[in-house]
Length: 346
Image (cartoon, rainbow, N blue to C red; front, side):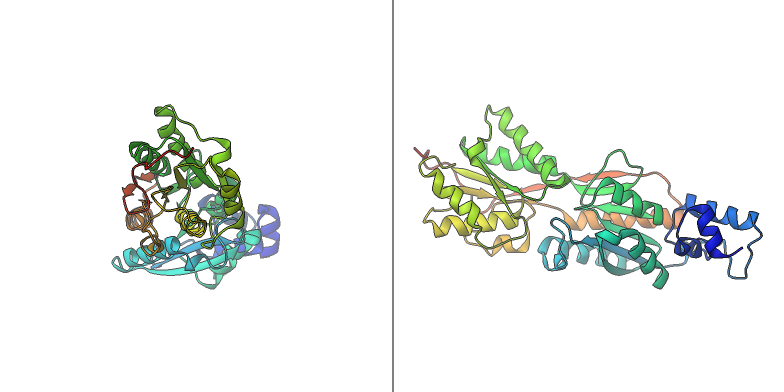
């Protein structure tokens, strides 16, 4: 009986068998037990066969981002939101005696790359950036490492830990703010890449509008790239075509889009906020550099990071089995890009 034979019987890869038999993380507890049972039943008992859990002694967490899809590009770490999140995680771990490995993997070879990484350097738990991932992709990671916390998305029906900002209340806060400023013709800049966060923000924003008898007009909906800070031609063209039917305010699903919108409006000699108020979402560092400074929704990245680290440590050190879905409420940050409606565009 060889490793290859066990892999065929268990219907898993040879790498998974190796991880399971050597007591290394990288496979789920259910798969590990299945592999060990098959090995024992077939008399496979090499000296390296260890049932001890390395998780209890390893002091390494792995942060994984899957690139090449949607908003998560290979350069995602240069984006303020993710840079701040990773730094906060690293600080939380350091204070508790753990270290962090940051791994970027190609989403097309998700399973194999994680197994290869764990083989090279095993970790005691994974913090997965779920921003752009599907339910199936997250389940794949959970089958490889049971000590898992997923950040920046949520699938309520999965028996997995999720920690995410409360996008719905954030969108609601943005809509409520614009309505309270007297705006009724409100535009909506939406990402061309759809995901949980953006869809949830839209739900919250629409709720604020509906409560006040308002709706987003189709002609006031603008599709934009969520990762491009420069002026986007399609948005500029849409504004030019609207002429005298412009919104007096625009909510953008993320700060990158909001900054792009402000640049475009400035180029068209439309004053922000006097002609059009603009509000973003995320409160990234650049939101205070743009002129005028951006009104936005603050995401408590430090809180998300500390709760994620604490949850993983409880699972590893105290074998806590209860899975959690944690939503962190957001805060409205009022700056200079929004103001009371000056006049209604005729």
